[in-house]
Length: 365
Image 1 (cartoon, rainbow, N blue to C red):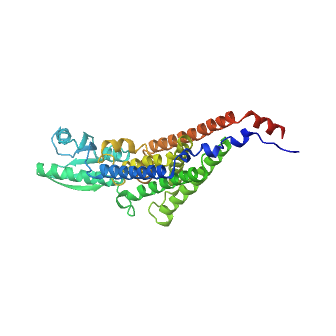
Image 2 (image 1 turned 135 degrees about the vertical axis):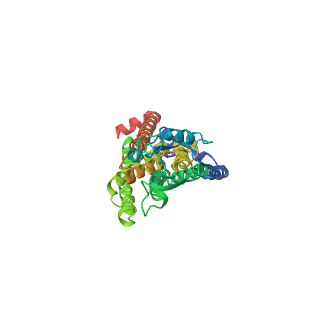
Image 3 (image 1 turned 120 degrees about the vertical axis):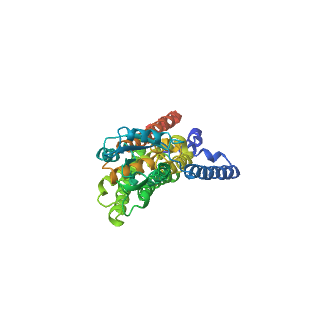
């Protein structure tokens, strides 16, 4: 049987052609766009990191004031009012009944420090460096000035310290960043070397690969930090679950962007997760000492969600873990929606653009 091909069959653009819009530009234009694109990302990186960390300033650090026995009634409220009146409002002070209540509030993450006023003249500043070592340092700086003005002395007691192998709480930050980097690098590599999926079945396969990778990388990252290095001993399983969520949320969002907007998704992912996400995560800097813009967005980007989740697991008995879990779930769902929605639209468009003669000949064959 002799097969004949119509002109429409030989001239119909292939899906690969449509998936590479940059192919219509010449080498010179591609190079110009590439150079300026990378330059823009580089300058954004410098601007974002320096803006976040060049001048850490305490801002409304929540602290409890407790009056020890022997002080006149109302003295605790007077001191709290004086602390709240400090120029620049570095503290947000309130009165609590006793140190037991203050400790519970610290563990519930409702306050970040406590100040015990003692009639003997030696007051106590209670901190929780596990919530951010820079916040503890900022409290010591503020109260050094306050106590000098009052003519009093104070001692510092770290109620919830960071682990002995977790210098300034940075190990959790680097673990979260490692998970994030793996997530967006794999998704970017799939998008660049394999391309966007053209059928829903391919989209499902890509999502399954990302999920399997997320489970594996989450487990191995937790294994390294718990059993190999001994940094977070005793927390392997919850860290594994968190790491799986961090990697999958990051990777799925990146892959969904790739399916929706093409190769420009790669610099967009770098802008979101690296340029904005890493500095806003804080690392050793808590949200109350970095600019309010970064403090606001940090908890809703995967590096910050991962860092905060690790702190909650390690030091605060999972208190505060709900918000990071919500953020990671949203990234995963948005990414899945973009991936399958864009794939379905591309699939329908491909079918509608297929010439009817092709369908007839395929049916006859």
